[in-house]
Image 1 (cartoon, rainbow, N blue to C red):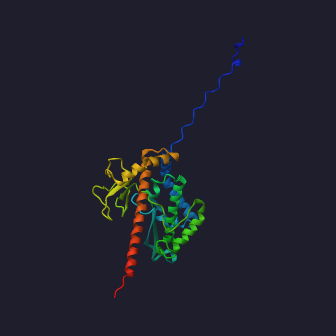
Image 2: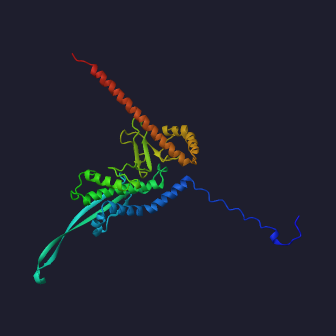
Image 3: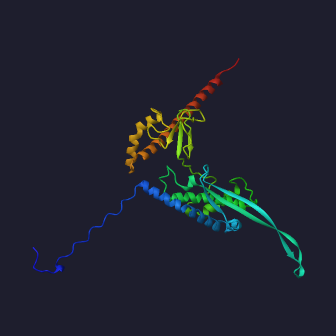
Length: 331
């Protein structure tokens, strides 16, 4: 029972209401989408600032100095550059100007020809290779996307150094010759803390949005495109004229690119539940799209393994024929 006192101080106030739980953690898919969006907004500034750092540290600012009269080194992003991660462009123009030369006493004595060299330099970056991480790169962190971008910019910067600062006056000793390798070593050493390793090629696999696979077991050729430009009802394999099946992304049942009872549909039926269970075991959602993406990848890998085995059998058969021919003797 309460005491006779009416003083409110005798009755302590209830504790504050419990705080609401923090916002639920983003799903891996949403987190990846947010990271991609952030990288997209920063990629242009990242490329430009790193190019300036490269020039200052490796070339003492001479690249920017030589290109200053034409607006500096331009960086552009291309959606049409599909076969490589980047490309360096350079050209030189020699402009001749006449200037009056003053004689004794300031009187005009004649005209002198002055040569002015203009350098036009540009680095073109592939949007589809390094501009936006594609499917199959979900395991890469955002810092790895940045590493990829920096390495491509460094590679193209070395080409500009060969063109603009080289001993051969812009005539490179091959695409990745002795001079290029010299600049590459210098750049890699100076920026090793940023994981820069300039090699003679861009070793990044291009992420294609669509893939069609030849259904001929002896062929299995893959046709990769950035747009849905292949129609199996009208197109066939260019190597063997076999039937094509879209394997990335996998069409829904009855969709374009599938036929009833195909080898691929049989593969889906036999492996769908297993792959879904594996994804859930990895802590992933196991949504339909995610499962079918892995189904398609495993199917393509299985086709490649079978094609390899067929090639080996062909080789063994040919070896047997050669051995038999060696035994034959003519009288």
